[in-house]
Image 1: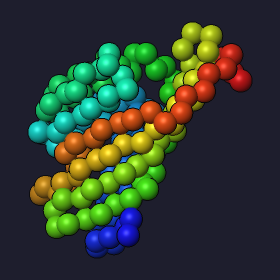
Image 2: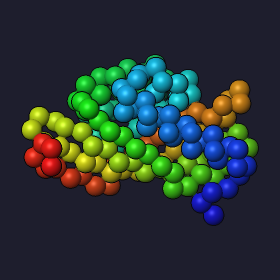
Image 3: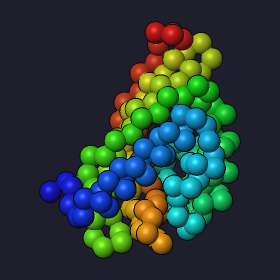
Image 4: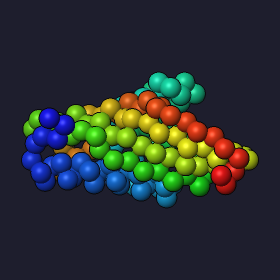
Length: 142
């Protein structure tokens, strides 16, 4: 079953995803960083220019630099699966991004495979692995 565990924890993990997406869209490094565990790991195998990062400080530093390439991004995320086992959860989420690069508008869709942990009563991303599913490019504004 794709959604298991206490409803209040599943809701908190959904809100974690929504906080992450909102912070990306607002380009808010502090809010975005607050979604990660101190010892988090972020991996994007389809983007070798962004190597795997270990630890919140390194993750946020890479994100701040990466966001310079995605001006005006609109980022959405939603869960496909949340399976909670105590203070740990396996989560699969999907993303949709729209942004301009030069004279091109890009639309990316992807999937995150996540491990979330509950620390001091709060859910955080312990690890996130992103894979690209689909990319569409068109002249800017189309």
